[in-house]
Image (cartoon, rainbow, N blue to C red; front, side, top):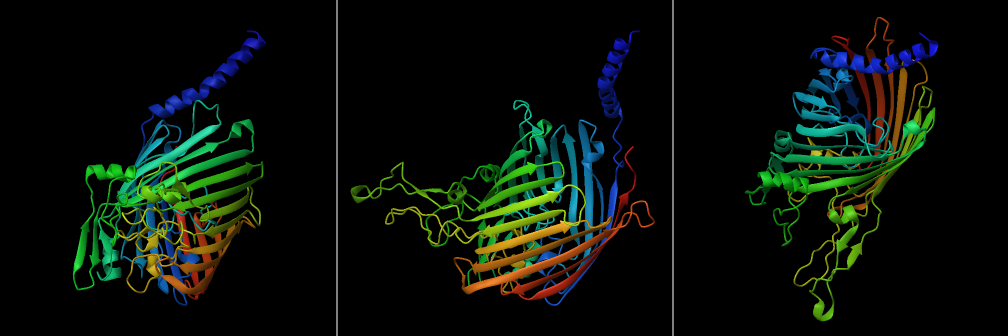
Length: 528
């Protein structure tokens, strides 16, 4: 056989080998215990007053404000990545904590089962999902779908990773999700309010998101752009509002099959807002526009990003109808008159990341402004008022539901002061008009050692409805270090994390605290 023929045969064999291996993997039955991971964690926190912000926030709600608190946590999980070579995969996980001085005596943090077919994933249960387009360790948090509150049990259909669209020659990629679930904090609401202020039972949850990425790593082009839209809705359930005379007004919010569609596509009409004859779209709707621009080099990556939060259609599109005439036509609709809102409320951030371990490996800086909220004036067209103005958006709050929170923690960015800080039994965000600067730094100075430092300055005005008498300020700081023992050593799989944090100011108070976390990770059985 000639040399050229031998070379051709070897090339053909090399091309066919992945297909043969893949076919063998596909034929091999799935072992549901293969790749099973475990984690055991012990955490204790001691503070001078309340737990400081950055020892409490962005921990998926597994935290407490009490001066002394802690937990023992154990989890087992089989990730979908165990079946990464297959067209389909299964995964599951259980994550339970026995806490001390938390909002509940037992915390089922995660309990889920999921399946993947090709790129699509179906998940049922409560699971911790990451933020999109932000650094989980260094960012202050996402404004709509954050990591600050306990996971909501849900049924979720998703493209969790970017899927390359077949018609764009490798330059366009898509991911997203659609989910329905139910909130689990009604017992906490009863205890927190003592049923003396508004609370809701059986609130239903809906979220959806879509993200588009333009770029091509295989073409060695360093620039990529990501844009996304995140939206969420609270709907259904029953709202209980004391009338001030010893009685309770009960609102049975719609929860029929058509209301699930109205949560998906904001429509329908809910209960009349107190003192008005105006009907909003059914449920508490909110969301964020996201954008991120990345420049990717061999050993570093720089990104800038934006996160614009909205509570209604006027803030979503920055347009509101104001098309009524004047004179004899004062109450006649004119189609081409709109009010344009300014783009003032926004989060802007920058991130520099080095791809190899070094003393300073990542830096994040963020600016957050939420004082505008479409303006201080809110009224709708009536027989006597010809204008239609949508202001006073009151971020994270709602006049029927208890707002964008779960178990007392906001489900977005924790710089919106969570209801769990309130000492009057009111489930509402009392500081949602603010400006903040945030800095995060991390690094790996030696093998096994990781650190991060967070610093945040904030100026708050309260809310439009209940403003502060004067501006309030707050500074929050965290320094944290983690040492992971060598995986081949006697303490392989063990890590120790120590963190010290402080708050100064009149928004969160003066707090100082230390947190110690000991973790053991490992596998029950490794993947074949």
